Image (cartoon, one colour):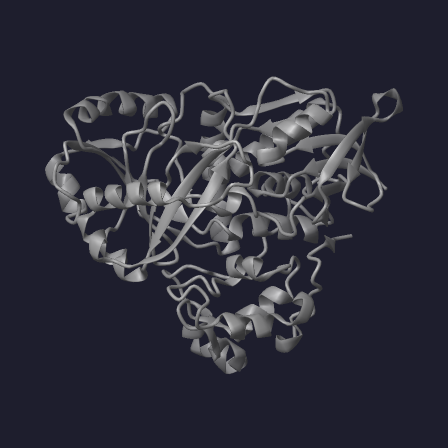
Length: 482
């Protein structure tokens, strides 16, 4: 089958590009190797909506993070994605770190972010009285917020599918050949699947982006996976802090962050370890011990709080300091996005659309899309997963209309049978229980499915059919939006 654009990779960046192109009269296919969208780096990050204050001025990353942040703040509000305006304190713990704060403020201005300001030691403790002793200075960044990271790629993909993008899950790209006359590409995708022909191709394959790039005869960068381990503290720890606590960054990493989450927990991490295995998402005794020590130093009260979960994510770092994003004929590569992909996603998508237009792809808006919206269509209204707003179990009117929203299936996270039913009947249903977690929070609480796992699995239904709660979704997760 032939398409105008083939997008390889269904993480937050790939789905954002699909959503952007869905706003135009373009036939687009999105190919994802896993059985769901947002399963790689996109699902294992610090869930911070950045300002880009600490990016390197003049880089593509600096520009696209700033643009993406503005777009995502507005998009999240329209789509009902949970965001909390926590602000962030960048805390110096030594005189040497305090001496670097002025340079960080200058860098922030170079990135166009001017709301950052210096705060005294007294103000740091006034804002966060539970911080450990030894603060030497700080910066207040009011527009660093926390966000629900799971619903963002799902919202992008849902909007794209509804607008006609063909989403093919479980479809890894294993080969590329150039069509006669250089008029496009033929992608070998998925075992037993037919070839995918496309006039233009976009590589947003994340951790596999260098491997895909070589299929297009590219080069010049290598993915060097950087593993970050994180600790999630129980909700009882949440009153210990109100804002994100940032360290003074180094040339290699942003450092260990302590942050509230929209789900009511406290998050500590990540570590930064270069690994060779691109599938190594294991945690280690050494990494977690180091994080626990950092946590006790930054916020001593954490020593008495329970840990709900630990996990690790891999960032698609390269040997370069900036995004590896460029156009080569009819091929666009989007690589080396690292940890800022969530914030920058919509800015990256706009940029990629511009590159495709330069390559000769006509971008004529679809008749149903206003010029003001700029892409896609009206975003889908996503289930609200945060603790700051009203959840279904708290909504008496909703329960009166449908009692399933009052029937708790996961008690730790207060997830109802109605929410699980809705997830299974959605445009992009979960292919497994891990996908159901990201759509509902089920099994994600302090018991980690020990109490509710069997009941939720039964509701999920045989082969992912969701039959037990009346869902109509199939188990493959593949949708064709035509």
